[in-house]
Image (cartoon, rainbow, N blue to C red; front, side):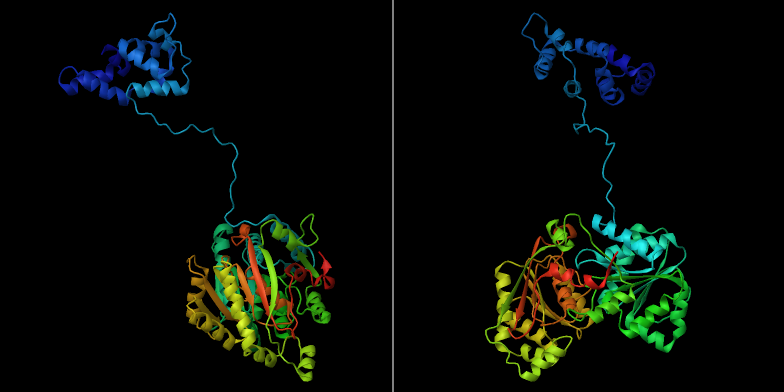
Length: 525
């Protein structure tokens, strides 16, 4: 064992001899050698390797030669044939294993000098381009503009990136987010918290002000105030000093669903919040107009934002919606209409009311919701979508009673159908929506009236039934938008949108054309 002792060194061998109370046994020396000797260095050194191989018995030398595929057919003896190998890294590892050393066989990886670092709250290229153009308008330009993105393309996410940039660049300051409805408000608060956790640089306040929440701004000077429009209007009437204080501390106001802003009460709130010369106003919407055909109303909205609007521009496409569908950001929609067998019989007076009204009069909608043939067509349409293997179907009903009716009929034939309306309790809404967004294998139909047209995101929903007649392109676009999220945004590659119509009533049918409907009242930005 003199070779082993030389490799272990005098000091280690002397200590082993003391531990043994004499001379360490060959078995002890071998056991320690497996741990203490740098085996890889030993077999990499040519002279040390040759010395080691010479110590092997002839039969072990032959066994090793076969294992390493050494050529022993010529005049060379076995030991010379083994020594004359090129001794690659793999051959040296084979030798070590042959000698009893444990070798890590994990593949050797070349060090990475370049690899992708994924952002935790990033934007797609088209969103980044739109955000950059918005900054030019709200900081260096007229300080107010609308960001026009199709539903399902990350309007809220882009807005939150802009807000986080704003808060990082201006410390301390407040951003006010205005929206209508609990779903939109809670979604905004949760989304900001998520965004700031990835993009923020300091602790800030997130103040929820809607419903029964108090309108107190004690110690609130840095962060985001999520303010319900109803709460803001009420405060403006009852305690004007609230908006004055909020305006003095804020430098950016964001109005979600900006097409609502021209209501006089909402305008007064926005005017009060943007009174400072350095205050900016950002509107977010997928439908930058109030109506389908009343250009005067749409021009009022455009004028309020000084006709400044940023919409997506994608090279090679005249309509960005078409591009986003082709690129997988939006689902490719199949849009069709089905008509009931027996239409409404409108009187001359009904037709006059229909022509004059902004939307379809409630009396006509109510009559349609009670029409048996029309309701049968709605149910048949849903059954047809189930047969096409849609697992999550969203139904937009014509009224609260109509919503209950459709859900009840579907439940009666043992289908998983739920309904939610503005009358549903918050707990019931949350439970039903959570289940609809879940990954259960059983198909589910969610009927709703008046609560899921905005602020609702269910990427697994691949079909929508529009059973709510409307003349409002804004409302129709919002309903369609609930199921149009594409695979790159966590949704489906295709979706199916079926509008159940009465032959006597108007309707829509192309989501791409809807996106560009209002361009004539806005200046290019």
